[in-house]
Image (cartoon, rainbow, N blue to C red; front, side, top):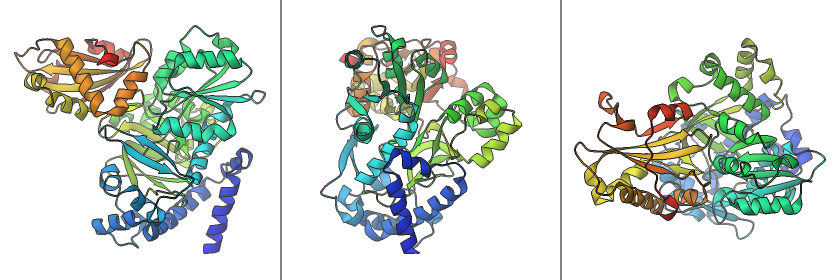
Length: 510
């Protein structure tokens, strides 16, 4: 049996090295087999991890879980309980970091403390193939592919990994989020390519609104990650791009666990247009947001949902340098298999959605962060970040009653961030503008990702801070509610109805 599993891994590894043969691994008709093999593969990877990774053995012992426990009995791990407790070598196979072939990238998350992530050659190749399936397959056959990597560069996980993943399968230039460089590059190389531009949705929208380039002369595919997109923003970008597709991942895991396809985009639009369909397939009524919908390979990722509605991910690939077993990134979501989705679509008569199905891979529905954080230009912004900044400022601590993080879409279709402060009854601030500057400056110091998100955001989409009187403005209805609401996620109509009173500050200089 061991020889059969070894041969299976060798065959998958060989097929995955070429875009043409990799397509065989995703051929339709094998959904049940991939699902079953993925679970068996996960069990073998767990056994290997217990045997060869010192940190995971210690983690199980600390949790009182025997090494031979059933998969369902294994404890969930996350950054706090696992990553922060053991060093990188202890978390690696064999208890040491390989001397060659490892790429190190970094994330700071919402805590501001940098975390390094190590990735070996096999997992980098796997990320490349997922990105190819998600992005490069949209290129025109008669044109070579030119990738413009407009994610933030340096050690940040997404920017580094996109460059590493796509170098061997395309021409690529890593410009970072710099409009001038991108436009000059496209002028220099001309319209003979399919340009796949990768970045966060707000930057892509701003870039394709720039009239210095005749976009109609170019074949452009926009590929986004780091945060979700509204269908209104997708439509806005599609005025000048031929395709707009996204990928789902996390620096804790891998940058490309799942991808949008024509089918998932059509399904999401159908769900947005039909509340009955949304009720049948999603938890929009419960969470109050339209889910992002992706497809993933169950042979490579075993994705579960825990009792709190959070996604728990196991990377089934045994070759990873730093394995992840039942890892919780604290995103809300769930998985739907095609066998459950297709009958619903047929019942609703959605033949136009069914016609888009080319892959029978299961669906991943993601509703945002379970800790009620919001995304801003690729950074995670938790309400606790506002709380800590207020607590560290004597004037704000004395005057502020409550706070709220509001993520909303403005009339132009941009995803915006508004930080609302409610003053205590009878209190005022001597200089609200300066207080707003101090708040943003403190948050930027504490959260490097947020600092970078502001530094690289499109002009006119910077975060804003509003100072509201007690029970005024967006806090008008708070007195009638038992619990404080620390996060609002609004569409353009909701934001306008809420009457968000922006006290605009200059965060780039904060």
